[in-house]
Image (cartoon, rainbow, N blue to C red; front, side):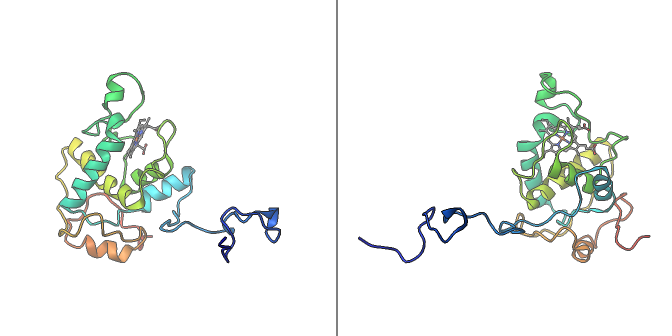
Length: 197
Ligand code: HEC
């Protein structure tokens, strides 16, 4: 019979701790593709993300359409297609307390929306395991568009189209962020945090 040279998966060998080939990853390992998220799951982390974090993806028609699709899958059931808090589960009285995205008291920002998707908030669960970073930012664009529509805002001008779903820039890459927003009108209330005191 063929005897393989490497250890058998899940084989028993005295050389390993516990006698099993199946070991836990070394401490501090991260899975491929995973990137750390710098804001903690507490009120301070929420406030910091809300004030500082901005969407690294260009605001293109393609990205918005992709965001809409994901929003419809994950969020509309509670928040409603228009983001007014009147999803089907609300209409059927299955859930309570779903805010509208134009709720003045909440004053959502790109950063706060991302934070809430990442960690969840009270009755709202986390979407960190169902969506990846790119998808969350796509949804984020669409949520901010819904907010703007609910407020009858002027709407945001599109950036120049790039290949959708294939353009992830790291979340804290301010430089690329600014370049990609270069054409955009100013004064939409989003803070360009980095160099402000
Ligand atoms: C099961 C129903 C449900 C689903 C699905 C859901 N949410 Fe929520 N969401 C809630 C509830 C409830 C709150 C209010 C939480 C609170 O303030 O206690 C909320 C609050 C929010 C807020 C406001 C947070 C703030 O700053 O106060 C945002 C933004 C939001 N959700 C975005 C999303 C997005 C984006 C998705 C899809 C990825 C989503 N939600 C899916 C129930 C849901």
